[in-house]
Image (cartoon, rainbow, N blue to C red):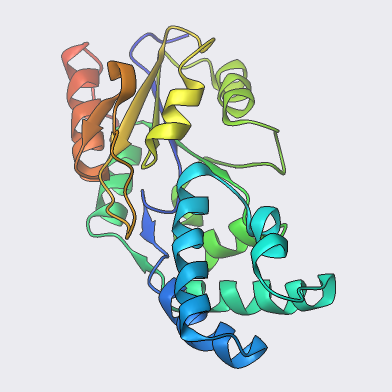
Length: 234
């Protein structure tokens, strides 16, 4: 194990891309047209969407409770339209491509460690569609490849033996849940991403470092690596 080697493990939505721009269209336009709900009902479901997203619920966990007369067949149709809207309006966040390319030039290993989407296999398709998949040394989809982020990180450590692991997420609760039982070389980072509904707490117990974006994380990681005496790779 090289003590100066770095593995950068990244969540996806809210860290590398903004995929939430199509959510409003889905609830306020598509859902109203597809199942005939009122504007008030659509606004309530939109509110529930961001609450569910904030605490890590899949739509299958709450749509059946709150969408009237929802069947499995209708769910399949709606979730397909939902992701079509999100995908068509997804944008890669500023500086992401340049930052990941810089990290790779500096010899940093880059892994995707994000949770699965509602449709199995879709996360890898989105990585390719958004033009980012080739920037990763490893793509791990939590919920498909491993049951938890913790399991995914431990497996990556066993495989690559890095000196440091930086896990980056935009949601404080994911980092808070991961804080226990991780190896001592794992560092937790939160990047700022503002959604329509933010929770009042951001860093309970001061368990993670906070940065504005992935550019700042990479600059910090590379700078610390160079201070440790590692020469950048050509």
